[in-house]
Amino acid sequence: MRIVGLTGGIGSGKSTVSTLFKAHGIPVVDADVVARDVLKRGTGGWKKIVAAFGEDILRQPDGEIDRPKLGRIVFSDPEKRQLLNRLLAPYISSGIFWQVLKLWMKGCKIIVLDVPLLFEAKMDKWTKPIVVVWVDPETQLQRLMARDGMTEEDTNRINAQMSLDLKRTKADIVLDNTGSLEDLNENFQKVLVQVTKPLTWTEFALS
Ligand code: ATP
Image 1 (spheres, rainbow, N blue to C red):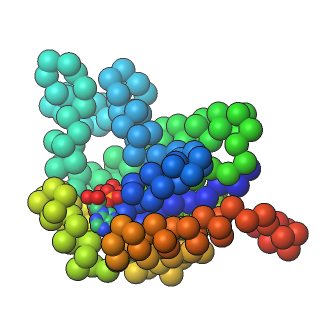
Image 2: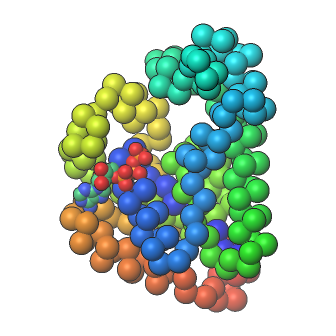
């Protein structure tokens, strides 16, 4: 099974591209969904986070983790962010692993792994090719402003991530999303051909 990596910066257009892959029948494992699942009340991840950050982090009355509150805490304190990453990483990796396994058992030949922190979490070694959705910083800012008013959390998230230009240098394929949605769709069709073409023996041996 081929596992295509999909990543980019905040608001660069990963979800939009992920929707395009799904529309073409390619299943997508979304790390953000997995990350939300591992925080659900009563799970191993939930217990670890409550033990580390205290019950103040729980939303009342349902006892779920207050994610915006946790986000504010960790994005204003790099040590707490590292702690959270360290605690959650094993749960997220195994959650992703199970999703991939399920798709493999269904007989899927190509799947996409949509992971915003693909490089930071060192999951890039699981995926080939790696598609980085790229946008210039000005357009990125404009789109984030239009989407959610560019919250303080957005700024902190951008600053906490590896720069999009560095991610671009690590990509096998750069998907340019600076233009319109029509342009993106056009660029996407070329990427689709690249990621679905059969591997040559040389590529297979070296992958
Ligand atoms: P996040 O990192 O926050 O999850 P993302 O990388 O998944 O973001 P999207 O949500 O796909 O990014 O896109 C960010 C915003 O920009 C959305 O409001 C989306 O509709 C818009 N957008 C994406 N691509 C384009 C485009 N080519 N033209 C105009 N708007 C776009």
